[in-house]
Image (cartoon, rainbow, N blue to C red; front, side, top):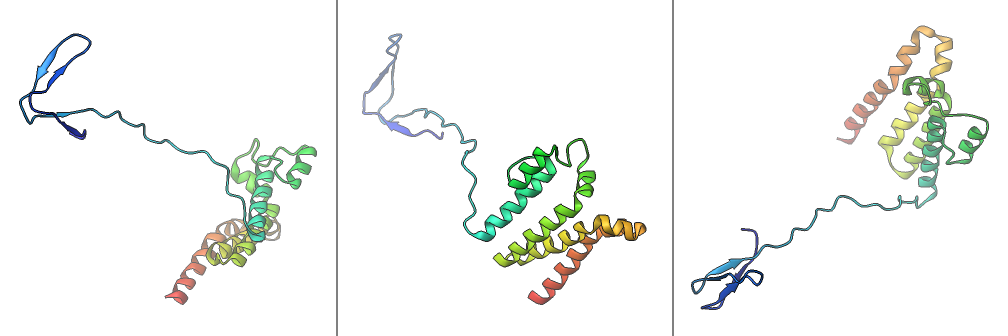
Amino acid sequence: MGSPAMQLPPGAVLEDSGQGNSLALPPGAELETAQPQQPAPVGTIRAADQPTNIRDRFVKWADNVANDIKYGTDITGVGTVLKKMGAHGVYSGNSEAVGDFMASLPLGLLRNVKGQAEVAQGQFGQGTKDIAGGALQAATIPASFMAPEAAEATASAPGKAIGALRARSEIIVH
């Protein structure tokens, strides 16, 4: 079916060399040969792409510092200092929501800085989202002390603000 056909010369005889059986085919008959199947490629392993300019490096650094704070790794100098001081990461033993609340100030500031670098690269949508979301994330704990009843509204504000910005940008673009 999917195998290539082989044209045999007239009067050809096929013999099984192992058992001495033979088969004579009529002239013009075609014999299909089975092709060995190639295994499908599963995936590849390669080194991660390295940042090419200073803005990309800054975005990667901000992500690495945030991961150091969240997971207790020591990828950056900040993570190394935190680890030597005994920090295990805010997600260690806590849910992600609790960890995000505990580290909202530094994680929010890092997200804000990352957004500024993204805007400088020309990624206006993602950069604006990260700037606004980072500022609101950094204000989570101070806002809960100033107005505890509004802390829940502050937590949901990034989604509302981004939706409003997105709707406004669609009006301007179109």
